[in-house]
Image 1 (cartoon, rainbow, N blue to C red):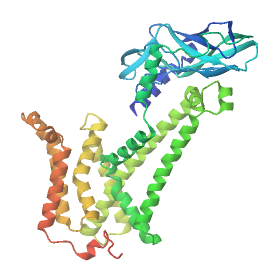
Image 2 (cartoon, rainbow, N blue to C red; image 1 turned 60 degrees about the horizontal axis):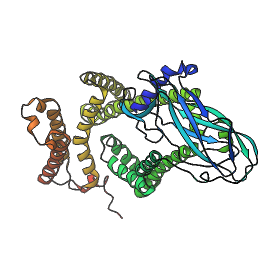
Image 3 (tube, rainbow, N blue to C red; image 1 turned 90 degrees about the vertical axis):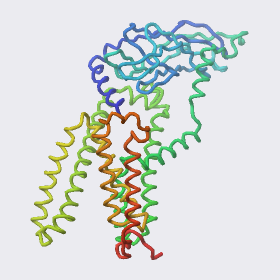
Image 4 (cartoon, one colour; image 1 turned 135 degrees about the vertical axis):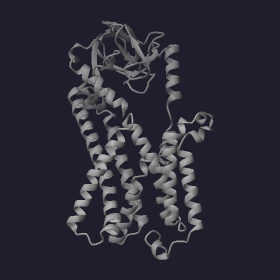
Length: 454
């Protein structure tokens, strides 16, 4: 997410100066003479001042877009891997990460083989380069530039030494590193599965657990469908959505010949990346989506506790005979009061991320153990749940605000310095111990969580 924001900011600065792009290119040699079936080498000279730089083709880092160079023409047959000079490896303050880039006068070599059925005559060879140029202050929007050379095909057999590619050592090294860095389909699949399993224990998942479980239970009762069936279709729906998005992105990056020919880009993905108006629209769409998510999430986090307090505290214990008008008034008042309290709490943190991290820790270490136990452990009791919630919340607050002030805090084991482990561990321990020491719940109360009819 932080790189998307940086792209928007850096591109916004460069967008107003897009007509003064500091990079110029020159393909050579011009008026080249060769024969059908021979291997020739085209050199692309990329020129810019030392203030500016473009990024490496093979050595890709997180953040900037890598450079892409392609060659095309009627007589172009097979193309060998691009020969790239050794890039500079330094910290890039624009993206706040280590990047690989080229600055000044940089020459790339593109070996290719002429088609064996090429007829004698003069032909044009075009060289396209897609790049993003930056300095320490701004980046220009990615663009594609094209230059061309003339090549004359003469009659005759293939000459000695021109029938196969001769790839330099540096190119072989780049290719080897590229292969070593590439991952097999199985590796990517296992990585995706591992990430999905790891996401189950992430704090951002916890608020969704009661919502999803309630949805499954209500839908099962209304539609007379098994909970497992609903859960299966729910999972397939989420998986199918992401698969569709992945296939769509893959299609856009695949390259459609007629569109590519018209746009002079390697694929539709490059066309989207190099068009400033499309990028402006996508940026506005992204910002609008982020704001919609923030607003909807804030609404949910205010409405849920206000409703719980209204129904479970006010209407159940304070005023059981309250009218709908009174309930509505109390609910709206609680939304306002909780909003003010939330604002005052957030103002005590240096950043929003710190506030969110603390809130998720309290939720994860106090609410989640009791919530999961209600659906997974029949012996769990309300007293154990209350003890678990109080323990988790208390440990989190102590570890966040008070314990770090202790002079011996840094001497503790790393697992004890990280509040998640002691808070979650003691919360679960308290849940189990208090539940075992108190009276088991009645079968009537278990019926809404456990269906033993089948």
